[in-house]
Structure formats: C-alpha cells, structure tokens
Image 1 (cartoon, rainbow, N blue to C red):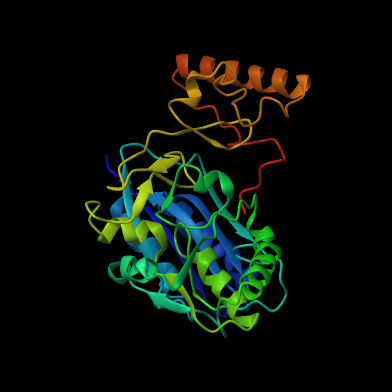
Image 2: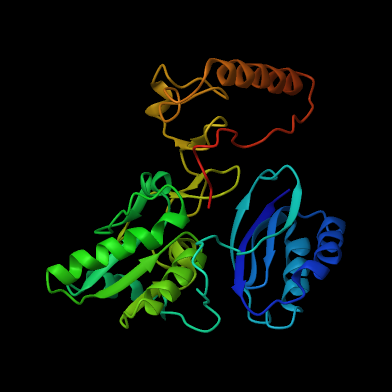
Length: 315
C-alpha cells in the first residue's frame, strides 16, 4: 500500500487553536492519519501520513479552518508508514524563534517561486542564507549558501544581528534570500529580518521540498540530500528516500560513510554524540536497542523515542 506524506504549514490568525485541538485530533485519528500537527495562535504546522484518500480529507478539514483556506502541502510517498503515532500539540509558536512580535501574518518577505529561485540566488548582489540547523545543512544545501551553524532556530536572530553588523562594516546592502525545508522557518526569518529594518528580503516559497518537486535535478543549484523530519531521514533530489539513517541517541542524520565509523552503534551512538554520552546513557540505549531487535523477531512494533539526548534540539 502506498503511503502519502504531506508536509504542511500555514500562518494565519488562530485564536481558538486550543479549543480546536480535540476535534482535529479525533478527526485525523479516525482517518488513520499518523504524524504530528502543531497548533498555535499564529497558525498550524505539521507532517501527516496516510492513504491518499485520508490525506485529501485531512487537508480539507484543515482548510476549513477560518483563515487556512489557502493552506498548501508538499507531497511525497513511502512504502511503509513513516510515523508510529499521531501527535496534535499546542505550542506558543508553530516554529520556535523566541522573538516576541515576529509575525509573518503582518510582515513577511517576498515569496519566490521555485522556478525563479536559481536566477535570484545566482545574482552576485544576493546573499543566500540557509535558515536550517547545522545537522540539516551538513547533508545538503544550495550552492553558495551561507551556513549560520546554528543548532536550533532560536539561535538565528542573534546570528543574523552579528552578520548584519559585518555587512554594514563592509558597506554592503545586498538582497537577502533565505530558505528552509518546507518554507516555514524562512518565512518567519524574513518577518524577523524585515522587522530589523532590511527591505530587500526574499524566501523560497514552499521551501526545498517544493523546489525539488518542481525543478528538474539536472542543472539545478541544489547539492546533496535534504533532511526530513520523519523516518525517511533524508530525501534525494528526486524525492526518493536518501542514504542517511537517524541516530536514535542524538537525532543526527548519519551518512553511509559515518556508519563505517566504530563510533556508530545502531540505536546507541554515532560520531556526532559518542563523546558527549555518559555510561548510563550508553547502557540505557543499548538495552532499548536490544528490546527493539527482540520485538522485530516477534513481529511486533517497538514504540520508542526518535532521539533522547538533550543536546540536539529539533526546533
């Protein structure tokens, strides 16, 4: 059976988001949907998986919310369900930046269609910034993009303010172009940057996933694989599953080469986290992996967390 995966978000005024949670969760659960959906006063954000018919009905339900009528989704497919359960959560922000007053519903940069993106970022007068976390950038990004080397999106505002000081010291006033996986982080980043007083700010509409869906790989400026927040871990330029796996200790993507490293022990450690791990954590993860393998032999699913160590955040 083909499983359809829909990555979606929409910034809109959603004052009764808490009251809507139970009904939305019940509807999605009844459709057999799994994945995650975040609800906040500023909108919704999520990745859902199910049959194509269930996903179509789920999107219709979300688009029926006042203000979410134009919600769009990026689609991909998998042979198996990439999520273990459905989570519908209430949040202060659907993507956490932590800067009060940043509101894409009232101030945002210029949207750039995927077909026009390469021309913009090829312009010498454009500075291209990857707004994703460092572990995402490490496995793939656009040619010429600046990597802020942030561990979480919360670090982006401080990084940008320092970067802006550098540009001003050099007497430069370039166009600023930003991108992320599905469009949500770069959309919020452009709101922040415009609020900081910069006018020429652009972002990739629909994010990397929409770009890969619409722009042929041959001749494009994308390099590598794209990290995704589900059990596929990464996707290739044609949106097929990539070559990375997830370290279930720290949550970092692990390449084929890194899996040859002695530090990589499935379910226990990888080169990213082996030096940061305590003996008790290592023993706990080893026991968990043992239980996972025993469950597989019995033909049962073992439900466990994707990542446990606190030094890797997924904001």
